[in-house]
Every structure is written in structure tokens, then in C-alpha cells.
Length: 81
Length: 395
Image (cartoon, rainbow over all chains, first blue to last red; front, side, top):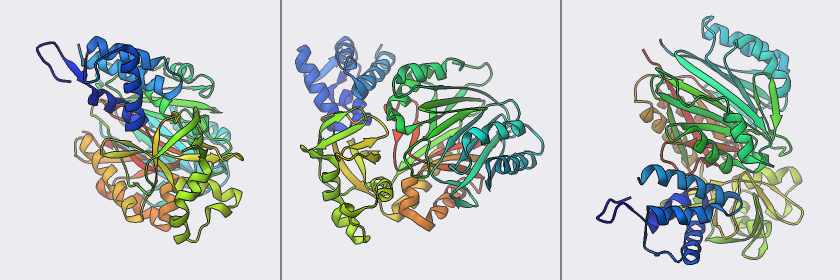
């Protein structure tokens, strides 16, 4: 999570990697791609609020995807202040 | 205060084993009561009988337990036995247990964690031992929820109970209470960090395969076909080299076969291994945690030498995390499939863990899933791995 002039941003790669540890890279990528399209977010990187909005969206999914997204959201909240 | 660890393995009825293990703990700890005790037992020593009987020997500190698919100490491995690991020293240990994982994983984990303190004055490090019923199918889910509830400073280590490959009922227990569909959490607060190391030795033998129909922990279809059909097709050649035909397995051979050829989820430069535990009549495969539809898996296998070296590597990682000094001993959670692969060489793998820890005593059980989640990790449920929880000797 790199600090920058516009505040700390989370790259798409970082977000996918967080989810991939439990879901595998392909499913994590699919979930992030679908989520960004649905929410109309940038596909490259996210500021804190965008990342949390995306993870909130994924957290509403049933089963492991939702649980992994909620866990990732907690980590993003702690890591990107 | 120096940390002392007792380990022992015993055969016999639950009550005979409780006497033998209790006596070993008293002798090895020289009369000091343990701060934490874990006992792991085959289906021959029903946990519901063993835990209350052993509890009388180990005092009021938490006693946790699980049913197993094999048991071991540094002296060797066994089936149909029970093993104890007891630690005495300057620790504060708190434990909780709850059932109902399958229906309400969040509620069950929250109930088990309810009585655990977040911090203990003077004991800055916390490692939580987590035991759970894998047949509930909520392995990863329970671990992530536990990690979220316990806080980001807590490391997790543990295992999923077994039942001697019967795949019918796996049990966990705390003190005198035993249940299936359950989770046990035991938070060990210490002055020095404990070390958690994890490693596996599996590599893919298939190309990428997309899960096209799944519900929770049950994978119905892969690439639009019944999951088992794809499994049998992809493993036929490798299995034939061992004289096994996946299309002609006896019912009792299906579980061991699936544990040898597990699913790998690509995650960066490595693979997260997921074990299929059961096959239904329609060819669906049941896993120990959720496998979302759309996941891409590779079927994996491991060679014996890689299984030995991965056990050693797990011990090395645990040692490094614990500071690299003298170790009092280690609690080990090792996948049953590693035993299936290694056969008689499994004992050598266990001995190599002890050797990496300077000859310290080790004890543990063969699991249906292993748990290791370090600070910052995003996943904590594993298969086909060795998890080593090392206790430094201390002052």
C-alpha cells in the first residue's frame, strides 16, 4: 500500500493478492473484476474509501467469498488509515 | 521460569490411556501442573471418555482435545493410540468451545471466543491453538472469523480433527466437554513469542480446472462434468504407476485416494492446498472448507522427499519465529495425507522436526486440515501441510 500525493492507495494487484490467499488467484481476480465493474470503480488502483466500498460489496456474497472479503476489509481499515 | 514440556503416546482403552498419559505428565513435569495440555486420540479411545479421565491428572488449566487419524511423538507414530502434550511454565491460558459450526460459523466462533481476554498484563504475546471439526466444511471460514475476533496481534496454530479415515464423525473437546460440529480456541499468553511454522510439499499434476458448480464446501462439477469424473481422469496415469485404478476403488479406499490427490488453488508463487474429504454418489466432492464456484484448481500430488523436507522447513520457520534459541518442545499438526504418502518414512519426518528444534520433544496428531495464521496473513486453513508450534525454553 503505497503512500502518494493523493493519499495511500491500494493497487488492484494488492487487493487480488489479499483475497487470493483463501480463494485462489483466479477466483479473487474474477471477484474484484466483477465488483469494480458493478460499482463503476477504476480497474487500476483504489483509494481507501473505494477499496472499502468494493470489499463491502464482496462481503455481501454468501459463503467463503463474503467471509474473506470481511476479513480483508478489517485488514485494509487497519493498514490504510 | 523455564518452560518444560511432557509428551507421551499410549495404547489401550480410554481409561488405561488416561492413567498412562497422566503418569507420564506427572513424571516429566516433575509434579508441576501444566499450564496447558492437549490430548489427541484415535477412535479407539473415545474422546468423551478420555478427556474427563485425563482431566483428573492435569489440574485446572485448560485441557483441549481432538479425535485423530494418527498420533505421534518424536519416538514414533502410531494408529489406535492417544498422545499427550503438556506444557508447564510462565503462561496464562484461556479456552472456550462451541458447537454449531455448520449452521452458523460466525456464531459458533464468537461463542468459543467470548471468554478469551484480548490482552493479559505482563504477557505481551498471544498464540491461539484452534481445533475444529472439518466435516462441518467451514475450515477457512472459522479460522478467518477467529482471527478477526481475536485481533491482528494473535497468531493461530492448530488442526482439524480426524476419525481414522472413516469420514463419519470428528470430535473436539475442552476439559470434560466433547462435541462434533465444534470449535475449540485456547489462547496462550506468553512473555516470549511462540513460533509457528507451516510448509507443504505439493505440486500440481493437472492443468487449471474451473469449478463450474459448487455449494459451500461441496464441489458438484468441474468444467461442467461431475467433479469425481474429472478427478479420476486427471489422476489415472499417476495412480496407475502405484497400481491403483481410481475407477475401481473400494469404498474405504476413496478417502485415502482423495487425500493423496488434493486440490491446489494458485495464490501468488505457491499453492493453497484444499483436501477433498468425501465423494457422494453423484460424483460431488466434499471439502473441509468452502470452494466458491468459479475457483480454478489444479490437482496436486507430492513426492516423499518433498514431504520430508517440507516438515523440516516448517520446524525451521517455527524456530526462527520463536527467536532461534533453545526450544522446550513443539506441538505438531500434520496432515494424514502426508502419512499416506510417506508410509514408514513418516516417523523420519517427525524426527526431523525434533532434530531441527535441537532434539526437543514433539507430539501431535494426523489431521484432516492444518491451521496456521500469522500476523498479516490472509488465510489460515491448510491441507497437506505440517504446522509446528514451538515453545521456547525461556529463562
